[in-house]
Length: 316
Image 1 (cartoon, rainbow, N blue to C red):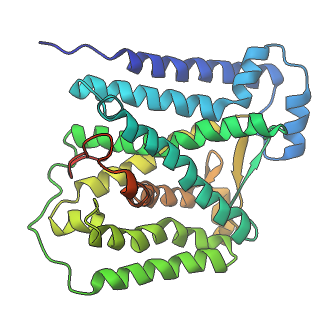
Image 2: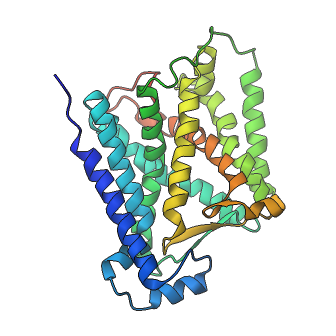
Image 3: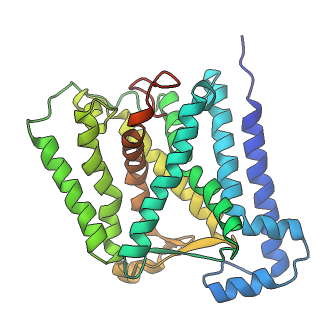
């Protein structure tokens, strides 16, 4: 029997396309380009809008587009296999979305309280905390699901099936050294006070937490590698990078957005993919894996309480 295309695929794709059209309408009607300061943002956002709906979408583009993307991915996975991880394990997925908010807040905390100056800042955020929190919750909750579901699609397509080798054993004590190396990278990010340390931050949680997950019998990158399976790692690399390209595209013309300050790149900071310096895109490659490792640690207390666990060949 031929499987039809899931309705959520069209729903998510439709939401993204409608938001893009309305965003471009607001850009054209307000005769603006990308905005990079709070003052310029306030001037545009405070001016009367000829199309209030387009202006509302321009302000809320990030959470709307990210929500649409997750719904679209759910539809793709349901079309691929008949039931996406969202439908098979809804409690599992809900905890992933909640963990996504917490995990991104960890990165934000390090960025704003440890880096001088911060590697990224937000501009155009609404003053009322209730409105700001709603945008945070939707956007941040979509980050991990977006990367993981993208990676799951890549696995399902068989793109990484051949990335395997003979099993091998990790030398005794090496996992401890890796963990200590991750702790050192994290300490550099927290205590180094320079934005260049954010390169260490994206990798630190992988090295710090993955050996712990391995010792506790959790899904682990190190276990995958010892089993001769590198597909999950590469799929997470691709998921993080793919989402990075999309997120930076959706962010560029939005009226609530983030901008980057990476002076350590020197003249290379001027070569950008939308707001992101091209060299900074490399951070998205380990980002997906770092979030996956952090999530494996975060869900230890709840595993198996409501739903069966996914097998070792899946992302989510």
